[in-house]
Length: 130
Image 1 (cartoon, rainbow, N blue to C red):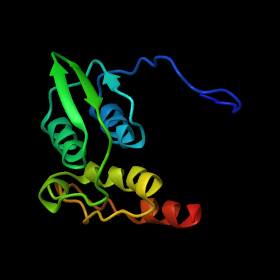
Image 2: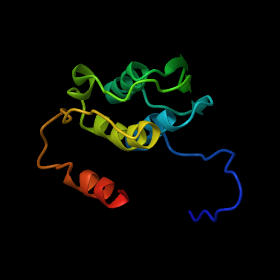
Image 3: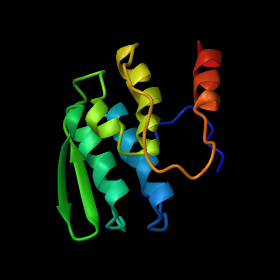
Image 4: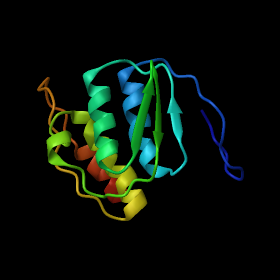
């Protein structure tokens, strides 16, 4: 996908109902105040954890079958450790929180131990952004 600037983005993107597609989309909702509707959302514990995270950060969640609607405004820059400690992908909220608030407090993520998955790449990317 190539996006050239100069025009506001709007529309729909069809994405398969995969966990690794929906988890980043959920935390991306922290960047906007408009409602975000995501369809074809798999019914998984990690999805529920990510939804609990954005809810703890100020968003409201509603669900109808495999569709979720995320509304409201992110109002906190501090992710609760009790949620972040449950899942590795919760660390994805760091970038949107930094962009929105200019600072973020996100504990190191938890989740299953399936080998080395350092967060160094995320931190280095954020360092390079300034």
